[in-house]
Figure 1: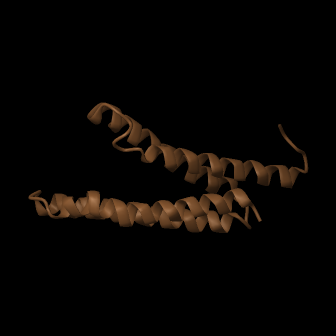
Figure 2: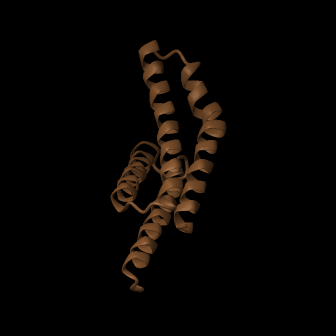
Length: 132
């Protein structure tokens, strides 16, 4: 069993909980209770819940990857999360002038690194050759 992928799965499920139970009241509910036009609130709700789905699916995928190595799947998840990192850093710096208001980039960077270590571990196991 790939302990890196198990760790990544745990981080993803933890992130899902933070997203739903802390982010929901702080971000999602105020948007839904705002005076924004109903279509804008609806799109906001869809995007909010889509992120929840992505986090859950990625957590499940990492759980599966713990026993079933699949580098293309793992690298796809890393690419999506690094896209999240770029968005949080880009919008944090351009709209907010700092990275502390939206620190989510930190967890997505960490999860990406943990998944990459899992892929590396699987590669070493398959090849039987230790790498530095």
